[in-house]
Amino acid sequence: MYRKTVAIVDLDAIRENYSLAAALAPQSKNIAVIKANAYGHGMLRVAQALQDIAPAFAVAIIDEALELRAGGISQPILVLEGANDTKSCEVAAANGLSLVAHNQEQVLQLLQANLLGNTPLWLKVDTGMHRIGFAPDELGSVLERLRDGGHDVSVACTHLACADDLSSNTTHQQIASFNACVSGLDLATSISNSAGILAWPTSHSDWNRPGYMLFGHSPMTTEVESASGLRPAMTLRSEIIAIREVPAGESVGYGARWTAERPSVIGTVAAGYADGYPRHAPSGTPTLVKNQIVPLVGTVSMDMLSIDLTGHDNVALGDTVELWGQDVSVNEVAARCGTIGYELLTGVTARVPRRY
Ligand SMILES: *Cc1c(COP(=O)(O)O)cnc(C)c1O
Image (cartoon, rainbow, N blue to C red):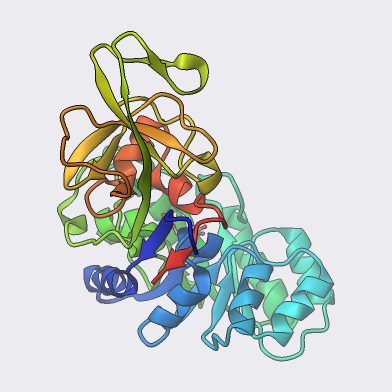
């Protein structure tokens, strides 16, 4: 490993963040959502770190679940998108996976599949996000059909569309709609994502589904006290591979999109968009060098980016640059780029070694 761009992952922080999620909702069990390579942190390593405290894991797709099984994870694993053909249902069953069913076609495939072993099913209800899920008034009949077919349907779940926004009324409506349609059915329930856990106690139920908060960040659009104990788990860092003086009036980088207004000292950092640092990060996006916030300047290249070191005389070739982590919030970098921290974390590419 000769290149110095690495993602340092603090597994203890992830364990602590999980425990915080659990403490915020003491009546609920928490299924750790580790899809998308555990939001970029390394799915198997994260699962291993959580397996003695998390009773179950959730991933988006069957392939992710199989990767966990191949890695020796024996916990229940829920596949959030479920299975769309009989073959996939059978693979899920053979590997002891739980499936979400969210449409009638999946129900048909499940009923036609030859399921060896036990495949607990979760039924997804669309309470207003309008992405996947049965209509609330379909739930009872779907449940009956699957149970008549011998299936073990254990949980009804729904997903909140606007829980990151404390001022939105949608969350109240979704929770009410969900509670109304599951009442009287013999099913456990699951509503909360990270935002639900942090900010909507009425969404807490049998199973909560924390994802983003496990990695130490709040998804909320405003600051909430409940998130203050979260510790960022990933530090994306690189190093300075060149330092040069740039006269006033000269520009830096592709497209000459940044021009020095004063005689400047520019550091070149060995990380770029091919590592997952967003190309559309504007000049001024913070980085951290020697405990000082230093702004990005110019266009991010594939393998390099530039920072303005003017006035930071103690910085030298080979110094470490934090792109996000403990001191530079990934949420802030994301906000500068018009996106969310989720996209940046999941976008750290395979070229970047994860160090634990
Ligand atoms: C990704 C996902 C979660 C986790 O959401 P966070 O906002 O990361 O906590 C929960 N439930 C479902 C269905 C998901 O797809």
